[in-house]
Length: 362
Image (cartoon, rainbow, N blue to C red; front, side, top):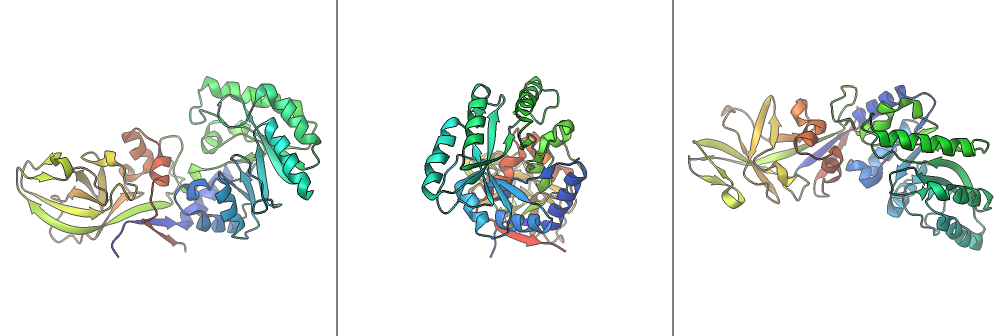
């Protein structure tokens, strides 16, 4: 079958975990595998993390919690999203997030029926204004959770809004707020966590007890520049399904947005926006073959793109091309994201289900 492939290098995943661990003091990694492990496949990634002696992971949704529970890997699962309690999810390996005083009341109401206790972390909003209780209500939430006989309170955490910018004044304010929380609760036996991938590099003094590591374990630097110590885990490749010659003045693709200025050799590649290829790549993006950087010409279609192969030799065996994740720097997601004014996450999580994931490790 001819289809795009996301080739997942599990050895590179292991390399990235080891590298990140080398940057830590005493903190414990809790890798983030939400959104199907950023498009890499949560099931396969979770199994590798278990082999690499990772004790816990983070997910965002109820269904993601259930998916990991069903693998029976004995991993701790920190649910970052809105708390939902039922028999499918109440488990001593699941850690729930308390975002409000109402969450504490909800837990008490549900858990008293079965007389079960659940593990919890409290998220405090130190200035991002997303999930988490506001600073002004933290004490009420904390002490209510601490007194509840149904809540095993293990940690307090927050999230930096601008972790990728080490000069952000907002980050400094958030860190001060989080330190206030720590001082307020330090006599209690709880842990703390604040940092994501960017935070490890920009705020190493704020590592605390856990690190919620995301993008960097997948081999992409969160700082917008290539880190040679991080090895891309995903390489997106796509098959060439047709080659042809077009003449000067002929058009390519929907809307005739590309007009040949000379006789050209072009190739049709089986990969389009239904596979997750950004439509912005039309007439601006490239694919890669050996040392060649081949321009995408015309609009990105649902299933196909057209590329200019005029510079290739007729003897070159052009069976497939690399879309991203190759050896050339311009194929790295850090560079692509900057060029197209977006973030690497959008490329990885945008890969659709019809792209076949192929896993390998030595």
